[in-house]
Length: 237
Image: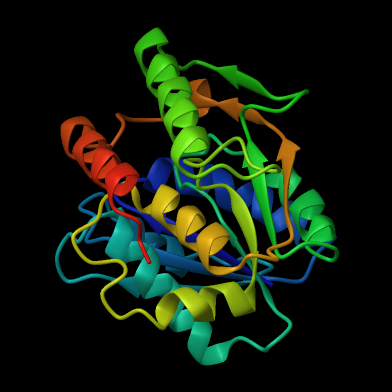
């Protein structure tokens, strides 16, 4: 199993995440792929510490944004993963519960794609502003109208588990990650539910703890809104 962490100036948050991953690797065997999007906060220093998991570190020479950072991680995983591997993606800001990775992994034994959803029973969101909450619910409402799927409510959360064959399917489209930003998480899932009619998908509840985050959000709001609207109008396949 591979855990992919796209990061830009998240060193303090990653330090906390790595402590939790050290505990998790007592239960699970995994490799962590950290893609550093040209951070200026000495994120690279993390590779000098000792961990109980295998860490693969990639650094961009210049800042490329979330979309191309995810692509870099997926491409590296493609080179070394086995056919039956799994890939977990999550944010590097310490807002996603690391202990839930074990449950995601178990769900992936039965499913192709598992989403940690903010919109199912048992989920909780802490520390998010009213404006961002409204934006999230608005995005959910629009995606359900344009791209409905019976088992999917959260189209934008990056905390997910994929069977490796889905990652290979996405990477077949060379320009898939170009000219995108934080909307890439929505584009990926829309592409997969349109492309794979028999996609085995499920959601699990989780607690989004935005109050755990150190530092400011990196999201470029206006650009992300515009790109999301573009996705709603133009299908990714």
